[in-house]
Image (cartoon, rainbow, N blue to C red; front, side, top):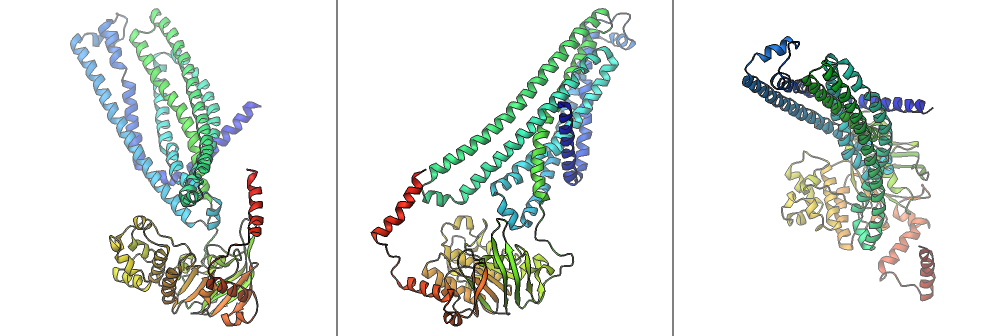
Length: 633
């Protein structure tokens, strides 16, 4: 039963390896010239290893122990040479063999490493490109740190399987076959004794490699979680410090790091146990060969030099066996990394282009939502049978309570998601009939949280239009009221945002986002609460820039502050995942609905002196339950 289970495990293992090799074979083929050259140098190194013991045989059998009359004719001819010349010849041959072996092996190592680096380069580029095109649903399900681990560490370890392990494994097998062949020609009895250990080593490597692979899979999973924790910490360090939760985060990280440590130590223990077992088996094989070999030397079947060459070959042939056992361990870990990388590559983008999708041209900005329904994977429905139309050049405000689906409307229009039901039309045609890139080229986005990349101000402004000249960049910066503070930066437009980010206010960064949208110059503008979180002065500056940006563009603005959409041509009120009100500000104020109620509430807060402290009794009633809930911890 155990043998049957092991056989199934082995078959499944090699099936996985073949699948991964088939998946990554194109990258290996691109570097086949390097690999072939490296293999040629490897064969040269192998031949030098085969020749290495023979000069020693000459010294032992001719110089130290002159050949008997029954010795071979070759030894008799060597004995006729001057002894000093023969020693010099043997030493020179040994030196030449060592020099050639070093040359061949170093070139093989360099070329194989070069091929491996090229494979990693191409594979990482493909994974990175694939991640950019996977839908937001995929990225919501995954931790950034784990994806980063797959993109960097897993691909580097995968190189061990694709290049190092396979190329070295092929070379070691070739060396092993050649040496066993020469050994069999010298003494089949000793060769038979020496190869008896091969089945034991093969079973040992197979047994341990299965356990090492499972341990490596758990280790990589734990390391992925640790990387995810680091990514979350770096993205929210300001919040952690603001709440004084450094000790809590340290303890949480310590627990995760300890689990990763235990998983790594288990893998290391298994590898050490495998190496120890292999060494014991090889020592037993060497002892058996020496025992039989000495008996054959005494009987005259072998010369001492023959036994020396045979033992040298035996050590050299056992070295490939040790390396093959280690390669089996590395291969098991590399298979796990390969599966993690393949999982990303096999994830298909949920936003697919129609086979006959066309480029979008001559956009006026007419948008139609026709009974659109959409829900996230968590199960909560974000939109339910939403229908409305936007005329070219209109300014449409989208308001409503949190979670009503306001930002989802913009995401659907950008085709970051596709609706499960209904259709979204642009210029009268379904969005899915247009090429995704062409569609997004005609839309500009200004988000609530302005995103700046770790590059220069110039690169950030021209992100949507990389071919923009300096004059266009400066003109758009002036239109967004960003020119004055950019000019005051140490290097102006060439200032790194990574360095200037701390000195730029939220309003300044938002005006850079607006300048980027100006430069993109698309007919449709999507604004997602662009003034939220700004002080009055910054919000006023941003609103002035937005008014210029919105001119003659079809604009959809998601807003929390209702006053920012007061001048909209049309206002949509979303609640309970559907449109409950629609009209102008005046129409909605006369309708006595959600919009009027919340507009008046926000107006009263705006003219007040800030939030009032509740009466003492109410404050106690609010705080005590929180303390009771928190006291259990």
